[in-house]
Image (cartoon, rainbow, N blue to C red; front, side, top):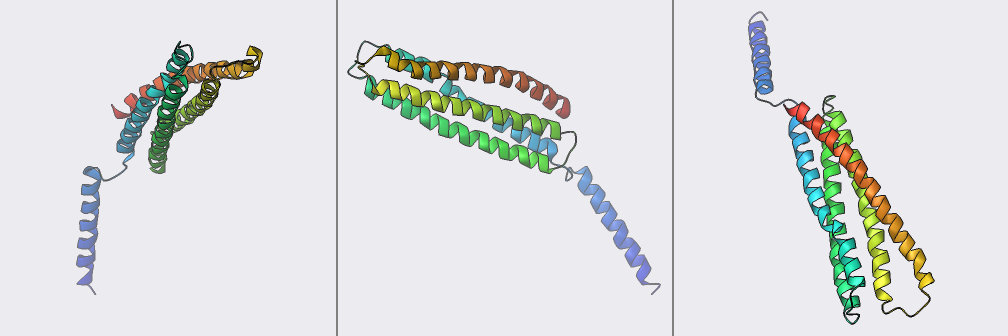
Length: 192
């Protein structure tokens, strides 16, 4: 029995040394790495969303064009491209949300507020995507009616809805910009 104690003591000492080595090698929390991944994912998702910002201007120019013969076809192409961007943007923000959840799963109290900010940003950007989706639908509906020979007043509800959506997108953009700055400041504080 006495001979077994030195072996147990040696085994405990080796286990302790191994644990210290693994901790020193960075095998502890991956919060910093996951925060970087989540940040990169958010930046990529925002890059995809940039393409949607061009849609209202391009559609308005198309609807005002003199060449009524090609408006429907051109509008359909523009709408299809925008819907593809909607799908890509939504998928990119879902991916970012998953990376934020992975960061939160680390349970690191320093990085949790950053993950929460990014998740809030994901939610706001998803609202923007939904607003663009509605805007695209209204625009497509208008393009289908060209040339329009009915009472112009009957178009007003659609135009009013489009105006409301544009204002909503602007409001959300303002909230996003403010929160993005706060999130970026926090991220830089965490990784310095």
